[in-house]
Image (tube, rainbow, N blue to C red; front, side, top):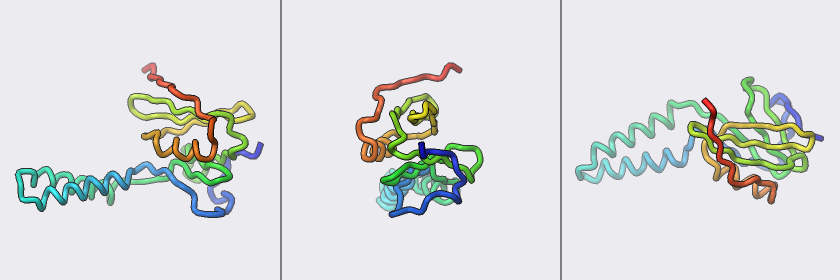
Length: 152
């Protein structure tokens, strides 16, 4: 099995730019900011809401921290699911048996089952981007309709 936990500086060289999933939804925040600007310049009763939307989205885009959660390449995926920011897990597609997306009230979890029986978890906030690349690179390996609630 080639999949392993490594230091980020030891990642294999990219054959081409990987697809990435970030914590911060940049496209959505940009869209909200543009909608806020449009409301602000409209001159209607929605000017206040437009100003609030614009300020909030600009604040989130400029001041809130961002980091990469997952990177996808045609050969493997990289999970940044460790407390140590310099450590990551590389999972090659041939080592992935199944994956499932678990829905929780405060965050969701992507669970990857590997051929050696180990399991990797990473917290995500939306299924669509992860499922798109997982179905592209590892088709037919999804375990569907898993809805779980925390026991707290």
